Amino acid sequence: MHPAEAAVSTVETGTGSLVPPGDWPDDPAGPGTPAAGSADEVADLAAGAGTLDELVARQSVCRACPRLVAWRENVAVVRRRSFRDEPYWGRPIPGWGSARPALLIVGLAPAAHGGNRTGRVFTGDRSGDFLFASLYRCGWAEKPTSVAVGDGQRLLRARMVAAVRCAPPDNKPEPAERDTCAPWLTTELRMVAADLRVIVCLGGYAWQAIWPVLGQCGFALPRPRPRFGHGAEVRLTNQQAPANQQAPGEVLLIGCYHPSQQNTFTGRVTPAMLDAIFIRARAHVDDRF
Image 1 (cartoon, rainbow, N blue to C red):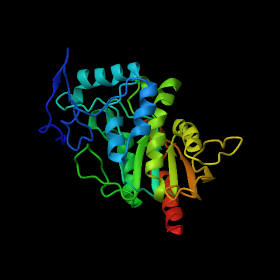
Image 2: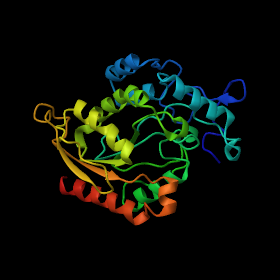
Image 3: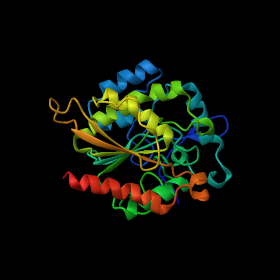
Image 4: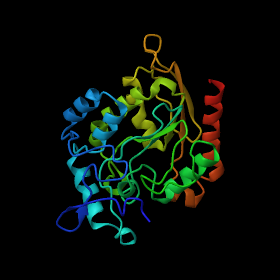
């Protein structure tokens, strides 16, 4: 059973129901959490968050992109037939995992019936099943499966984020939506950076989205920008590290093909290929602790 089924209340809409902030298991937000309604408000609320808990709460109620808000809520109300009896999260997916990660995993955006349903990034669809099995085999996750928020799953010295926090139509966020969402990721990266050693980008979109965020966080960016590829590596030096003890001196950026259903079914991504990425991340982390 979906962990939230017996624990949530709902808000009625024209054709179904939505779960209000604070009524989901382990919900980071509450009725009084401020919600951004524009790009400027995203920047202000991200910069003004005093703690990581406050930041992820604000991420989880953002309403800055009208197209994404309409889509995520419509999906949560109409629902896929196979999940029609389950509550849907229907909100932005906040960062999740260790507050002091050695590994940061960056994805594109939540899936409409995956993270948008379960409340956790890379959870509730086949991409997530493939990814979490690898993370478990490589020592980054406590369990081989991730079902939904409240299922007892835990990342080990790792954290997951999405470049765009809301499920987009056709899995294609617009550039303006990516840019509006970027301050959430920039502030989160700053807050969790003390022990960070490796960033793994799942797919070319995440690879492209992370570069301006890294620049905002003080990393020296190579020119030209390195091309994305499976196993591509770039060592990045943080120019702010000498003056800021919370900033890592060096981070290894690794590219990884996205474990989408299409990629895994066609063999473009195999379990061994994904394991190799996270084993490489583990080796780099262990060399520096």
